Length: 116
Image (cartoon, rainbow, N blue to C red; front, top):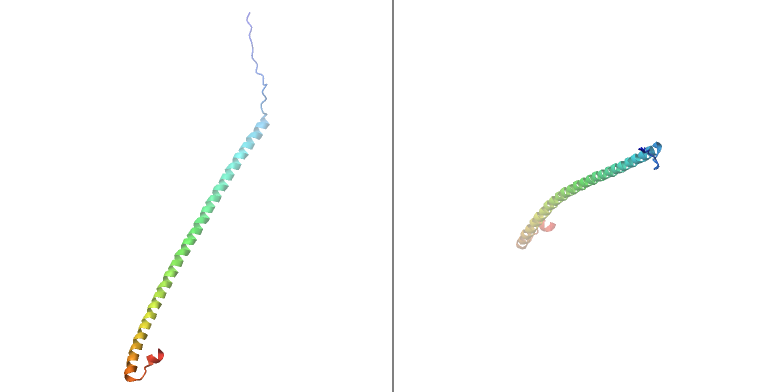
């Protein structure tokens, strides 16, 4: 006599219902979307900061270059003025020496002596 055994499955371990699986799936998708949006916001913020820093740096460099040009121009003008003053002083010194020599020899002063 042979006995045949039939094995039937018993679902003793409870499985989540379809609605529970759907809610879990939706929660996972919402979490993933939130992470992606946060990463995108962080990347956009970083890029914006880099752009602002670059613009600020460019403005600083431009201002420094303009300042250097103005300083160089002022230095050139100052040097030219100093050279003119030195030349004028040299002429006055020469005129004084000529006037002093002529006044000591002739006894009369010149206009340059009066100015000096």
